[in-house]
Length: 226
Image (cartoon, rainbow, N blue to C red; front, side, top):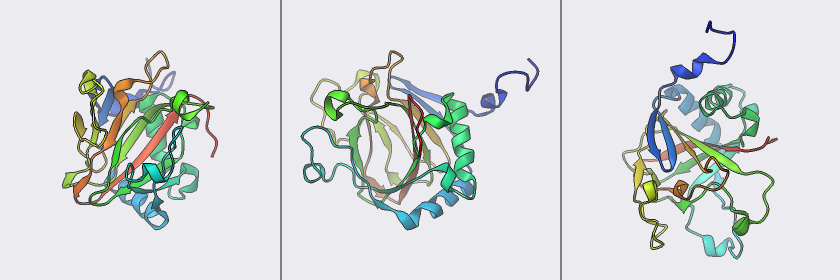
């Protein structure tokens, strides 16, 4: 098929590696340039606030302290005058084949030494969170810095491991993805039938040495408006 007549051949030029089928997770080396990563960090670092949680029924700010200890800020591509986030967002839409308008604003996160995010799901179970207007289908992470030790993204239930009900949500076990500047990680929170994938539970291991920066794009099943 001649280029430009139909489809978008450029997606074939973005290399990736399948990390897992349970959960469905793909790794994209060199997805962003070092310059793009630095630009995103500089954009975010002056506006960081303590990260928050969506609370389940019965949870409060007090009884969930310590679950997520990073700092972050939401920035949409439209707010970025440099155009960096626009380029990254367009690239994410190509590899996921999901509409750009279905994505939430980027959540730019910083983890200092000792900071973490216990295992959790990105999708929202209506039985725990109440009715939802839309649902998170997939998550795309762009690692903005290298990290000397710790800070891996981990999937403790990969291939059904540790899913016997005894798992401690603070443990950093299972499939681990080490942050490397510019690399991307895509994983799906929903199964093809639209239900939450139980193996998509994941977390951010505590940083041991260095500082972790990551840009997260959550993609939903319906259009989002900033």
